[in-house]
Image (cartoon, rainbow, N blue to C red; front, side, top):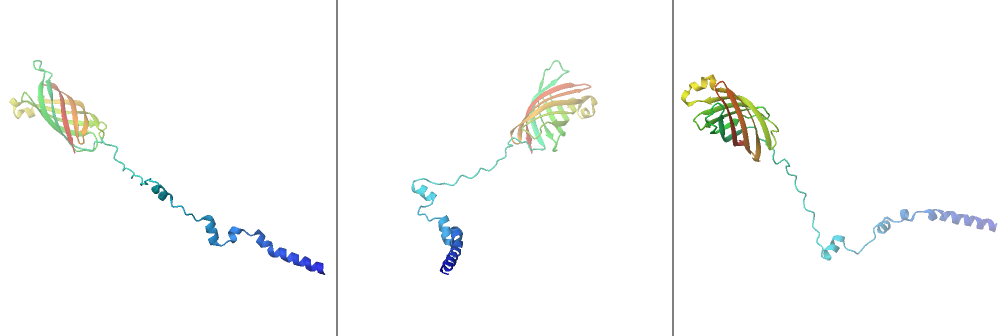
Length: 214
């Protein structure tokens, strides 16, 4: 009987201590104790205070630069006025190699080529040249803009007065090539070569000028 009592008491003690033997100390511990174990208290100051105490200066990084327009030489004008100076050569006048000429032109407003250009020039022999061209521009939004043009010209003869306008012999078929180069937006330097041929006259001219767009 004593043996049975001792055996039962031993079993009772073992089973009463069994959950404590396999319990997790981290899970069963109080929350405050877990936080102290995960975040142990430290007397050291923050890193930035330590660096400042040692003489280092912590400054914020500079702001990122704003993105600027990379297309600095983009030509945006859709119309322009040109002032030019050049040399006029009458191909049928063997005794006179060339005459000075001064004039200008207006490029009518249009976004894309081809465009109309109307101009007039004064020649040093008191004659005048009126021209209307259909102009096609390559790469018309870039700084370098080559072009070609074709159209009709009229040579004004002073001694004929108003009759010069109705005289069909004074009209010529014209064509030309050239280019414009953007210097300071919207001002461009311009180079022209034109040729004209008709029933009575044949001529060519070479011009250098400036174009002002808007």
